[in-house]
Length: 106
Image (cartoon, rainbow, N blue to C red; front, side, top):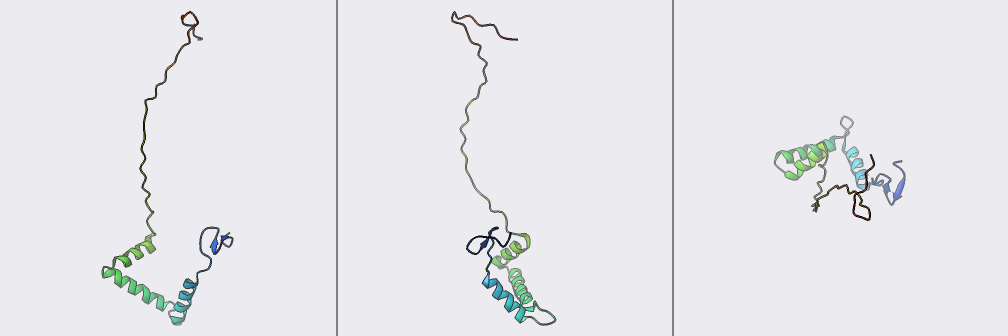
């Protein structure tokens, strides 16, 4: 189902199928790695990111938190105005033409 497209480059789940920048980064990370550590370049970027967070860079801290814990749910704000009216339940017995009450069924 992930391969089914509904429009353009998006899958049926809304994910982008073609991500050329991601692909380019992965190729460069692989090319910069060594036989002992194929992700050496990526680890260097992660170290720099961690340093920035330790130095108080709020954007770096936010990005790390979002990556590790997931982005917080976006709050929706709505104002609802209600007008309440009094609801009364009343049992009314019909009257006959002469104004006398009709007998009730038991």
